[in-house]
Image (cartoon, rainbow, N blue to C red; front, top):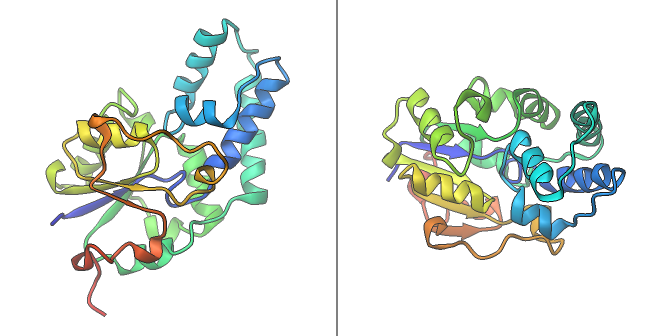
Length: 224
Protein backbone atom coordinates (compact mmCIF):
# COMPACT_ATOMS: atom_id res chain seq x y z
CA UNK A 1 0.00 0.00 0.00
CA UNK A 2 1.12 3.56 -0.64
CA UNK A 3 -0.13 7.09 -0.05
CA UNK A 4 1.39 8.85 -3.07
CA UNK A 5 2.41 8.10 -6.66
CA UNK A 6 5.37 10.06 -8.03
CA UNK A 7 5.54 10.05 -11.82
CA UNK A 8 8.60 10.91 -13.83
CA UNK A 9 7.59 13.06 -16.80
CA UNK A 10 9.76 12.46 -19.88
CA UNK A 11 9.38 8.92 -21.15
CA UNK A 12 6.57 8.19 -18.68
CA UNK A 13 3.74 10.71 -18.95
CA UNK A 14 4.90 12.05 -22.30
CA UNK A 15 6.65 10.30 -25.20
CA UNK A 16 9.49 12.82 -25.35
CA UNK A 17 12.73 10.92 -24.84
CA UNK A 18 13.08 9.87 -28.47
CA UNK A 19 12.60 13.48 -29.59
CA UNK A 20 15.21 14.72 -27.12
CA UNK A 21 17.70 12.01 -28.04
CA UNK A 22 17.49 12.57 -31.78
CA UNK A 23 17.68 16.34 -31.38
CA UNK A 24 20.80 16.06 -29.20
CA UNK A 25 22.44 13.65 -31.65
CA UNK A 26 21.78 16.04 -34.55
CA UNK A 27 23.01 19.12 -32.69
CA UNK A 28 26.23 17.43 -31.54
CA UNK A 29 26.87 16.08 -35.04
CA UNK A 30 27.10 19.69 -36.24
CA UNK A 31 30.08 20.04 -33.88
CA UNK A 32 31.72 16.82 -35.08
CA UNK A 33 30.64 14.75 -32.06
CA UNK A 34 29.23 11.38 -33.12
CA UNK A 35 26.90 9.60 -30.69
CA UNK A 36 23.95 7.25 -31.25
CA UNK A 37 20.69 6.31 -29.54
CA UNK A 38 22.16 3.46 -27.43
CA UNK A 39 24.84 5.86 -26.15
CA UNK A 40 22.18 8.39 -25.19
CA UNK A 41 20.17 5.69 -23.41
CA UNK A 42 23.18 4.49 -21.41
CA UNK A 43 24.55 7.87 -20.40
CA UNK A 44 21.86 10.52 -20.56
CA UNK A 45 18.41 9.02 -20.02
CA UNK A 46 16.84 10.52 -16.90
CA UNK A 47 19.63 13.01 -16.27
CA UNK A 48 19.48 16.79 -16.16
CA UNK A 49 20.79 18.96 -19.01
CA UNK A 50 23.83 20.27 -17.03
CA UNK A 51 24.86 16.68 -16.25
CA UNK A 52 24.54 15.71 -19.91
CA UNK A 53 26.67 18.66 -21.01
CA UNK A 54 29.32 17.95 -18.39
CA UNK A 55 29.53 14.32 -19.58
CA UNK A 56 30.03 15.47 -23.18
CA UNK A 57 32.78 17.89 -22.14
CA UNK A 58 34.52 15.20 -20.12
CA UNK A 59 34.16 12.32 -22.58
CA UNK A 60 34.97 14.25 -25.75
CA UNK A 61 37.24 16.98 -24.44
CA UNK A 62 35.31 19.77 -26.11
CA UNK A 63 34.11 23.13 -24.87
CA UNK A 64 30.67 23.64 -26.29
CA UNK A 65 30.00 27.08 -27.81
CA UNK A 66 28.29 29.52 -25.43
CA UNK A 67 25.20 29.58 -27.67
CA UNK A 68 24.87 25.78 -27.84
CA UNK A 69 22.55 25.40 -24.86
CA UNK A 70 20.11 28.08 -25.96
CA UNK A 71 20.07 26.79 -29.53
CA UNK A 72 19.54 23.21 -28.45
CA UNK A 73 16.76 24.10 -26.02
CA UNK A 74 14.93 26.25 -28.57
CA UNK A 75 15.12 23.59 -31.29
CA UNK A 76 14.04 20.93 -28.81
CA UNK A 77 11.02 22.94 -27.73
CA UNK A 78 10.14 23.47 -31.38
CA UNK A 79 10.40 19.70 -31.87
CA UNK A 80 8.05 19.25 -28.93
CA UNK A 81 5.54 21.68 -30.42
CA UNK A 82 5.54 19.59 -33.60
CA UNK A 83 5.76 15.98 -32.42
CA UNK A 84 5.21 15.64 -28.65
CA UNK A 85 2.50 13.19 -27.62
CA UNK A 86 1.07 12.04 -24.34
CA UNK A 87 1.53 8.37 -23.45
CA UNK A 88 -1.62 6.38 -24.26
CA UNK A 89 -3.71 5.70 -21.17
CA UNK A 90 -2.03 8.30 -18.95
CA UNK A 91 -5.07 10.56 -18.63
CA UNK A 92 -7.28 7.65 -17.57
CA UNK A 93 -4.77 6.59 -14.90
CA UNK A 94 -4.29 10.10 -13.49
CA UNK A 95 -8.04 10.66 -13.46
CA UNK A 96 -8.81 7.40 -11.68
CA UNK A 97 -6.10 7.30 -9.00
CA UNK A 98 -7.51 6.89 -5.51
CA UNK A 99 -4.50 8.57 -3.87
CA UNK A 100 -2.60 11.81 -4.51
CA UNK A 101 0.06 12.00 -7.21
CA UNK A 102 2.75 14.40 -8.34
CA UNK A 103 5.46 14.71 -11.00
CA UNK A 104 9.23 14.78 -10.33
CA UNK A 105 11.40 15.40 -13.38
CA UNK A 106 15.00 16.12 -14.33
CA UNK A 107 13.76 18.56 -16.97
CA UNK A 108 14.08 22.31 -16.54
CA UNK A 109 10.98 24.09 -15.23
CA UNK A 110 10.39 25.74 -18.62
CA UNK A 111 10.61 22.49 -20.54
CA UNK A 112 8.45 20.60 -18.05
CA UNK A 113 5.77 23.28 -17.93
CA UNK A 114 5.68 23.58 -21.70
CA UNK A 115 5.41 19.80 -22.07
CA UNK A 116 2.43 19.67 -19.73
CA UNK A 117 0.77 22.56 -21.56
CA UNK A 118 1.33 21.04 -25.01
CA UNK A 119 -0.11 17.67 -23.99
CA UNK A 120 -3.02 19.09 -22.01
CA UNK A 121 -1.80 17.58 -18.73
CA UNK A 122 -1.43 20.89 -16.91
CA UNK A 123 -4.96 20.89 -15.39
CA UNK A 124 -4.45 17.38 -14.00
CA UNK A 125 -0.97 18.10 -12.57
CA UNK A 126 -1.64 21.68 -11.42
CA UNK A 127 1.12 22.81 -9.05
CA UNK A 128 2.25 19.27 -8.18
CA UNK A 129 5.32 19.55 -10.43
CA UNK A 130 8.82 19.31 -8.97
CA UNK A 131 12.05 19.64 -10.95
CA UNK A 132 15.74 18.97 -10.39
CA UNK A 133 16.29 22.73 -10.19
CA UNK A 134 14.77 22.62 -6.70
CA UNK A 135 17.35 20.25 -5.18
CA UNK A 136 21.11 20.09 -4.78
CA UNK A 137 21.60 16.80 -6.64
CA UNK A 138 19.67 15.33 -9.53
CA UNK A 139 18.94 11.67 -10.20
CA UNK A 140 20.39 9.10 -9.45
CA UNK A 141 20.67 10.87 -6.09
CA UNK A 142 17.43 10.56 -4.07
CA UNK A 143 17.06 14.31 -3.47
CA UNK A 144 14.29 15.04 -5.96
CA UNK A 145 12.05 12.15 -4.92
CA UNK A 146 12.57 12.92 -1.23
CA UNK A 147 11.77 16.58 -1.89
CA UNK A 148 8.59 15.66 -3.76
CA UNK A 149 7.43 13.36 -0.96
CA UNK A 150 8.16 16.02 1.64
CA UNK A 151 6.22 18.66 -0.30
CA UNK A 152 3.29 16.26 -0.56
CA UNK A 153 3.51 15.41 3.15
CA UNK A 154 4.10 11.68 2.62
CA UNK A 155 6.58 9.25 4.20
CA UNK A 156 9.07 8.25 1.45
CA UNK A 157 8.49 4.57 2.16
CA UNK A 158 4.81 5.11 1.29
CA UNK A 159 5.50 6.78 -2.08
CA UNK A 160 5.44 4.72 -5.28
CA UNK A 161 7.67 5.96 -8.12
CA UNK A 162 6.95 5.37 -11.82
CA UNK A 163 10.15 5.66 -13.88
CA UNK A 164 11.50 4.75 -17.30
CA UNK A 165 15.26 5.27 -16.80
CA UNK A 166 17.83 3.29 -14.86
CA UNK A 167 18.92 6.60 -13.38
CA UNK A 168 15.42 7.11 -12.02
CA UNK A 169 15.17 3.55 -10.73
CA UNK A 170 18.40 4.07 -8.80
CA UNK A 171 17.13 7.36 -7.39
CA UNK A 172 13.94 5.70 -6.16
CA UNK A 173 15.90 2.91 -4.48
CA UNK A 174 18.21 5.45 -2.85
CA UNK A 175 15.14 7.27 -1.54
CA UNK A 176 13.76 4.06 -0.04
CA UNK A 177 10.73 4.10 -2.33
CA UNK A 178 9.13 1.23 -4.25
CA UNK A 179 9.40 1.76 -8.00
CA UNK A 180 7.72 0.47 -11.16
CA UNK A 181 9.59 0.48 -14.46
CA UNK A 182 7.59 1.79 -17.43
CA UNK A 183 8.99 0.59 -20.75
CA UNK A 184 6.31 1.74 -23.16
CA UNK A 185 8.03 4.83 -24.57
CA UNK A 186 9.20 5.05 -28.18
CA UNK A 187 12.82 5.05 -27.01
CA UNK A 188 12.38 1.42 -25.97
CA UNK A 189 11.37 0.48 -29.51
CA UNK A 190 14.29 1.93 -31.44
CA UNK A 191 17.23 -0.21 -30.32
CA UNK A 192 18.12 2.33 -27.66
CA UNK A 193 16.53 0.63 -24.67
CA UNK A 194 18.50 0.74 -21.46
CA UNK A 195 20.29 -2.41 -20.25
CA UNK A 196 18.87 -4.58 -17.51
CA UNK A 197 18.76 -2.84 -14.11
CA UNK A 198 21.54 -3.52 -11.64
CA UNK A 199 20.82 -4.75 -8.13
CA UNK A 200 20.50 -1.18 -6.87
CA UNK A 201 17.83 -0.41 -9.47
CA UNK A 202 15.52 -3.42 -9.51
CA UNK A 203 11.86 -2.45 -9.96
CA UNK A 204 9.00 -4.12 -8.13
CA UNK A 205 7.11 -4.31 -11.42
CA UNK A 206 7.63 -3.71 -15.14
CA UNK A 207 4.86 -2.61 -17.50
CA UNK A 208 4.66 -1.10 -20.97
CA UNK A 209 1.02 -0.08 -21.16
CA UNK A 210 -0.83 2.33 -18.88
CA UNK A 211 -3.98 0.40 -19.73
CA UNK A 212 -2.59 -2.30 -17.42
CA UNK A 213 -1.58 0.09 -14.64
CA UNK A 214 -4.26 -0.99 -12.15
CA UNK A 215 -4.15 -4.71 -12.90
CA UNK A 216 -1.70 -5.65 -10.15
CA UNK A 217 -2.71 -2.83 -7.80
CA UNK A 218 -6.49 -2.44 -8.06
CA UNK A 219 -6.60 -0.62 -4.72
CA UNK A 220 -4.88 2.33 -6.38
CA UNK A 221 -8.00 2.91 -8.51
CA UNK A 222 -10.79 5.06 -7.22
CA UNK A 223 -14.07 3.11 -6.89
CA UNK A 224 -16.14 3.47 -10.04
